[in-house]
Image (cartoon, rainbow, N blue to C red):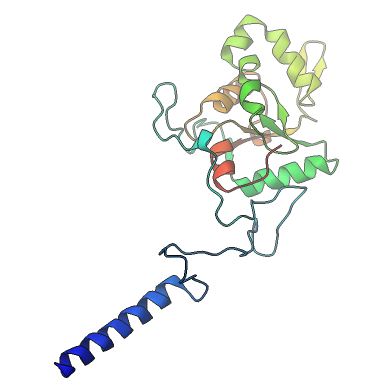
Length: 225
């Protein structure tokens, strides 16, 4: 009997030791939960960088994704998953959060050659958007808008995107490099705007597609305005 109790005690000790290794030294053994608690751990954008142009990540280690972006099932069409390169053969680069953060930083710092563009409708923008971005709704910049009122689209290009109207000929020499986004990989709003831009002759090298959009931005706990 003593031998059996000794074996049980040894086995329990090893089990607790293994659990301690798995949970880590900072686990609170008194909270009655097996969840890992890491309150106070730094939350950086990348290692050693906590803030870029007022953009940071939520420092609450228990923060959860915004419920508005937690829904996984959206009817397709129209909310179909966008491919990585939806504009091929056009060479439009698909970019990440870091690229958008740096573009926002540059724009905020006075660089007029770049612009972060929220292609969503104003109702969505009011729920939060990327700092230093401007809202150009896809409803004003898509194939339907182009067919209905092409001059209104030209006005957006000249007034906001740095394009020059040379007596009816569009000059893109000083056009801004645009970083367009919408609600995420299932959202077709910024792709619709990008296709209209390509139709208008906007240089492919000056169009960037942030596929992750607000879905991924919120998932990473990044600052919104």
